[in-house]
Image 1 (cartoon, rainbow, N blue to C red):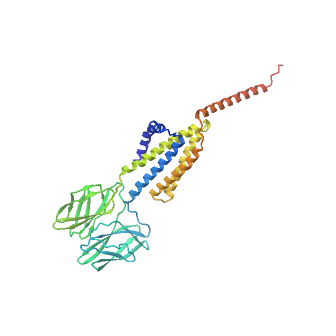
Image 2 (tube, helix red, strand yellow):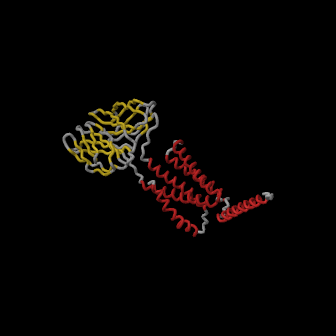
Image 3 (cartoon, helix red, strand yellow):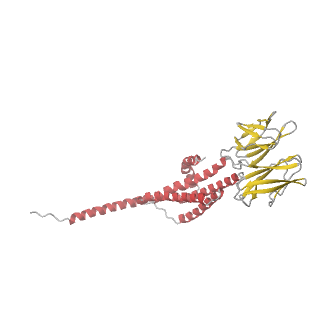
Amino acid sequence: MQMLNALLILVFVPIFDMGVYPLVGLCRINLTPLRKMATGMILAALAFCAATVVEVNVIKTVVEPPPPKECLLQVLNLVNGEAVSVEIKGHNIFPDKIESYKDPVGYTRLPLEDVHKVLPVTVSQNGVPHQCELNVTENLAYSLILYSEGTVIKCKQEKDNIIKSEKGEAFLRFINTYSENMNITVGSVNFFAPSSYGISASLSVERGIYTQVTCKSDTKTYHIDLGLLDFGATYTFILGMGTGTLELHKMEDVQANNVHIAWQIPQYVLITAGEVMFSITGLEFSYSQAPASMKSVLQAGWLLTVAFGNVIVLIVAEGAGLEQWTEFLLFAALLVAVSIIFSIMAYFYTYVDPDQLAKLAKDDDNMVKLKEKEKENMDMIDVPKSTKM
């Protein structure tokens, strides 16, 4: 996608010179170089606004890691029957009852008073309380898995992976509620889920639709339908025995990526159009308006301002500690502010005719040569004549 900017520049330069600018001229709009540059800055600001919209929608599917002295927690209720209530001592983070096999809506932040904490948990069903413990550490995410053994509800906690795959793969794990071990093969990846609420490792698989997944127990082979495993998602599959067949419950721990990469194209189009109108026009303007003796100096000054701009970007990106979408908004606001100042200064600018500059430069050269010739003549007059002996 980064090559798109360079490709669009090659395409946009002739399009603007032979298409856009002449069409604007036909509308009787005097599009001076300074107006082109101001418009280019506005287009660049719009590009950052477009990038902000894309980034905001991207981070909606991302689970942010918890800050210090906090952890993330979700509850997976595998207890049959009525909904259960979960109460963690000193915290009321689950005020509503949790239905059996219901997909959690997301992770909940659990405040901790220290780096590591052991918290008592009370799980109630039909008014009957059951006690267990939660052993958590800051900056991590956990799943609290509730299951029953006879009439007793027990808890099991599992550390979760909330980081999305950089390759766009899906992470998945299996919880085996059956009394036999399970070996599951998803594509080329093998999972082992021990019996009696054993949990497999969380492994990544390629994005795809998996309808005939082989699942082998100690005594029998099954085929299960996992459906679509989407880009960047994390899934938990609950395996259990139904009436003569293997039952499957699918839960999505981390949402799949739902923003297509093509949504980056508008921002590239806008930033390239702004670059063509500002950078190319600016270089041409500074060169044409400078006297012959200052053209190289002005080109160097232009590159110096680019260097200062890169320093500002480095300071904001590395030192400010802002979120990505906030950085984009900041750059957009700076561009708008600078374009306003630039437009005010451009309004009072008086253009210089390049031909007139060239003529003046030529006259100056002629004047210098004339003065040098006069000086040579004066020197010859002042030399004394030789005397004959």
